Image (cartoon, rainbow, N blue to C red; front, side, top):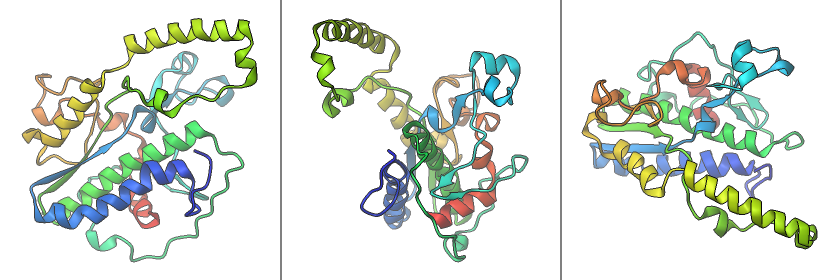
Length: 268
């Protein structure tokens, strides 16, 4: 994150969102030809929730939530380089109103990528927020053309993978100083045990993705964001299509705004 790719685009945005946008659109003719089909966009909690703002922001989400740092829907917009998508927090997307003919007809503003104030965590969150918005915008276009292809998003939550080991860790010469080395080993051991206790297994996360990709109940109810911390994916006491589906009250306002979704599509 916070570096430019050879295409001149911020890396987190290109890797985590634009690459998905491009690949999906390249595959659409095949998906249409093989319908019924389904597109599953993998999101994450950081893409739609953040900690409530505290004293420094004058508790915009409430004093108690701010003091506790409780999770709340992201209220900020999606940033595409220098462009911030305008949205109306009161306007709700129907996920059925956008037409496929809108895709890239209008000219879009020039996008510049200034990384002076870029923060890796914010860049990643912004890219994943764009993924959720894209999933809903795509569903609108697919549904309006009655092509038998549905689009969903899922947050499989944090999984215990070997990504950290494969990626490697940066270390300084100070890390070889005996007291620092010993402390690193001790706290590393404790941290690893805590990760094993609190994170999902790869199998658990994969089952969630496969459920959204294959469940018959989700065939005709696209545009959803699924997360099994909402409810279980099966036998939840609701209609099967809404088991694990995050309610719109917990979605960021920008992904519920048709105009913002359309603008993101054109910029992409």
